Picture 1 (cartoon, rainbow, N blue to C red):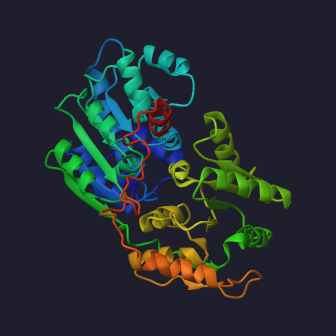
Picture 2 (cartoon, helix red, strand yellow; picture 1 turned 90 degrees about the vertical axis):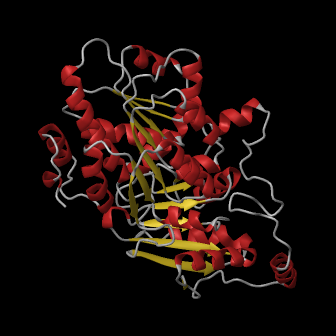
Picture 3 (cartoon, rainbow, N blue to C red; picture 1 turned 90 degrees about the horizontal axis):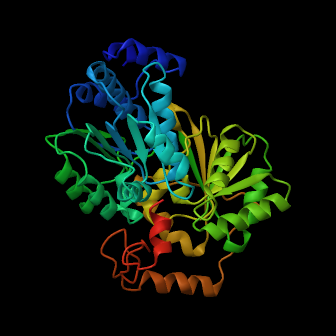
Amino acid sequence: MLFENLNLIKPIEKALKNEGYTTSTPIQAKAIPPLLEGMDLLGCAQTGTGKTAAFAIPILQGLSNDQINTKGPRQIKALVLAPTRELAIQIHDSFCAYGKYLGLKTTVIYGGVSQHPQTNALLKGVDILVATPGRLLDLINQKFIRLNSIKYFVLDEADLMLDMGMINDVRKIIKYIPYDRQTMFFSATMPNEIAKLADSILKNPIKVQITPVASTVNLIKQTVYYVNKKNKTQLLIHLLKNKSIVSALVFSRTKHGADRIVKSLEKAGLQSQAIHGNKSQNARQLALNNFKERKTRILVATDIAARGIDVEELSHVFNFDLPEVPETYVHRIGRTGRAGLGGIAISFCDQEEKPLLKGIEKLIAKSITLVEDHPYPLIETASEIKTVNSRKHAPLKATSRYEDRKGKAKSSYKGSTRKSDKAKYSR
């Protein structure tokens, strides 16, 4: 559907044309009309489907109509909660782009940086606030923020907030928001706790489901390389020396692993940067901007830091380590193949990761193409085979995808009494 057929006001249509947007994505076509009518919405959509515009455009149009009859200093009328700094910044930039000709003020706040520029912006008046839960609660407690005038509330990437231990903070924030509001709730997956949260804050919502989590973008070419763990770095270097790979996002399971990969790539003459939670906000933003502007060809990231990375025409995604949660694979490869474009997803699988690969293939209901002709084939040792077999027959105590084999919650925020842990996961 064309945006010009969605009954949008002229300033928004003009801004969308400036951004090169003419045709809406499926989630935009299904979500924007009921949202313009003031309905609540429950959206199940993975990243890359265009959901930011799906909620930003109706909010901007609603606020534009409201401000005609509004006098006095600006008060926060719309609140968008996002789990990571990068995603919050991306959402903020989208609001600014789509609302370029409306005269509305949008501000983004997140942890990991000084609060003073953020509080100064808040004191000048804000119409739309995009925030991560931890910093928002902090500034509410400091009396810098009041949410009693909120008319539009968006909870984005709710399942990731659950993974990161933020749901309790979200529940606290909701208590500060007026009951009479329009609520938009988005999540790529719907585990029980997320479904219960949605039921508790939505009122007769319209439900929109785009690209179920088990399905991957058909235009993405998916391949897997069997390789010994110790040879993964050499295989990555071998593949990245191919100059036809215009841009590559490499996923590492751990922060330290990401740093090691970058060090090895740089040693091999391949310029790259890492982005993860141990990096300062300025360093993370610099690395992301360099990648978007094609100053850096290779970006190595952890899963949490990668949420919010929206790069046009990203050609390749590499799974250096296979994710432990199959759904995460879908999110990862969804970084490419965005906006209807094609892309290539390459995964490395060592002997111990074969059960993870089976779980991924079961979820996406297809076999990933195996590439056997490469210089670092998997050599199975007796000890590795024994380890894998013992794990296959080990009793699993986990009751959900958020628990490990010992039944402990993966989120180190939950149950932690250390302030540093809480701060890390709330930023």
